[in-house]
Length: 164
Image 1: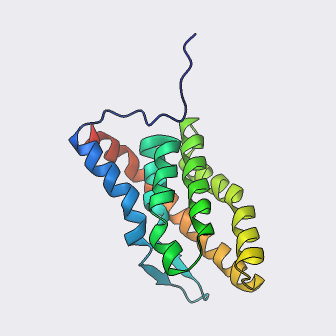
Image 2: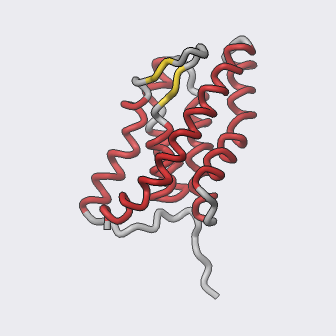
Image 3: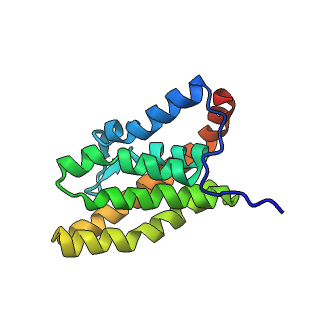
């Protein structure tokens, strides 16, 4: 019986895939600059879309690389290196769950739940953020993850076809 490496990127490395993979791992840096303010006191973030798409299209390794490379700008600007690990967790877990044929939305929300202890622990104990700020951040990230999971769910198949 042949074993399959669930962490492999499993793609046909053509010109389109190389360019898109490079783009999708750098894109979260650009998307982290944009936020939509809500009347509830938090912002909807965009960066997760690229990490989720990288995880769907390139598996856990692609999601992990996108979370790592794509978080550098935010980590530097916010003086919070711990968020890189959180985004690595998000990309890795989404990629694993999607590889095991989970629904995209369930994969993203479960990955976020797995990331939460890291986020809460580092923001509270290492970054010394007030708990109310952390709770607001959790709400913003939950809503953003949910929105981008739906968008990624419907856009990943056309993107896969385009990259063939």
